[in-house]
Amino acid sequence: MKRVIAIYPGTFDPPTNGHLDLIQRGSAIFDELVVAVLRNSEKTPLFSVEERVEMLRHCTKQYKNVRIDSFQGLLVEYAESQKAGAVLRGIRAVSDYEYELQMAWMNRKLDPRLETVFMMPAEAYSYLSSRLVREIMNLGGKVSGLVPPLIEQRLREKIKVAGSAPKKTPRRKNRS
Ligand code: PNS
Image (cartoon, rainbow, N blue to C red):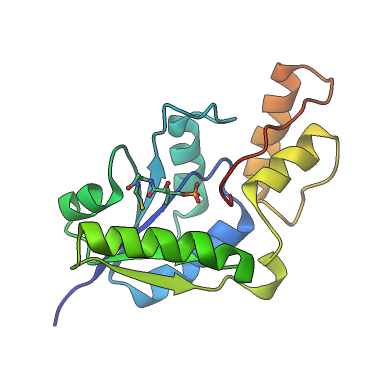
């Protein structure tokens, strides 16, 4: 039988319970799931790629078929290097659909063999995003239940290092 390797790409700054919900669902239907953190020199993330990879490794260690990695450049090229046949993306609400559809069409144009598979996270995470988590933390709100305890702790440490004054979180063009 054919083994299907899927890539779950993203920024994961930071990983949320919504991401972890999708990883759990993806690990149940694919033979192998590679969670791939994008190295993007154009953005100034809160956590370095190495920190995000380490946090994701910690939070997914129970899944034997999940691997955490990072990549730069085109997703389709990275997928080919991993021998992946699918890209996994989460759709929380209709508002995600347009951006996701555009990316999926473009990736299909670049590599017609690569299928994009959309999955829905649990309803409880349908309003959750990394951007909102960062914003809530910056403004002194509670994020328990939205991110795993380790990530909450790391967020607290980051905010402490950055200074106790609430900071403005830059608005991102895309959805995460
Ligand atoms: O978590 P995000 O920020 O929504 O993830 C976006 C991501 C990483 C999936 C997307 O930006 C991406 O695939 N970037 C890699 C560069 C690329 O292949 N661009 C063309 C895609 S249409």
